[in-house]
Length: 202
Image 1 (cartoon, rainbow, N blue to C red):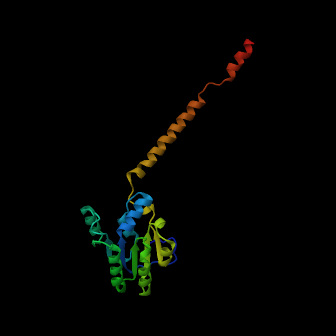
Image 2 (image 1 turned 90 degrees about the horizontal axis):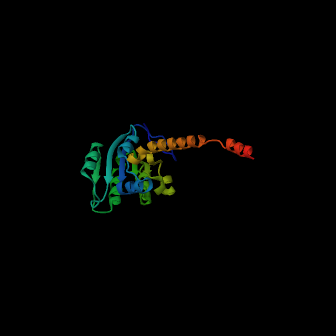
Image 3 (image 1 turned 30 degrees about the vertical axis):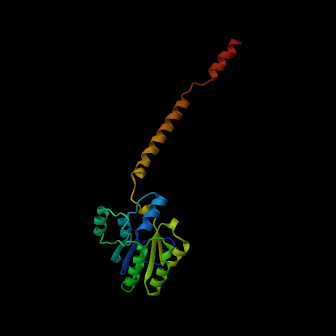
């Protein structure tokens, strides 16, 4: 499996690449909630990286923001690491990405913050290929174009909600009701016979 970038799909990812994944949790999670009303499916995102060698998966979120023990266990099961600075989590992301640049072939920035533009330029100047994965509606065109590959995180990368699962059932119910209403209108008695009786009385 290989990542699919709609805007720069011509740049084919190679299998033998060392990849670092840097997750701006606040940006990606708030964007998915505001735009799609759902939560990001990190497992599906990591699987979408494909057969490439993932050396580090780093998740950045300020310590004053809640991270449940369940999520911590899940994240570690993916081989990920948690970074919980007191504030300015994006600064820690930038420092880590710069520090690891020499050891990576590809840096995946999971977030659409335009403030990462200088980081993208620097990583590319060090010979590192940069991929930006983010919610397209909250990512500027300039940031998308700066990356070697841009991967839009659409509803495909969300955890399905119970509302979405129940939608097909409601649709079937509506169609059945409409069909029943059509049948009742067809069963109405025709009026020509009544008009005939009126004519005979005259």
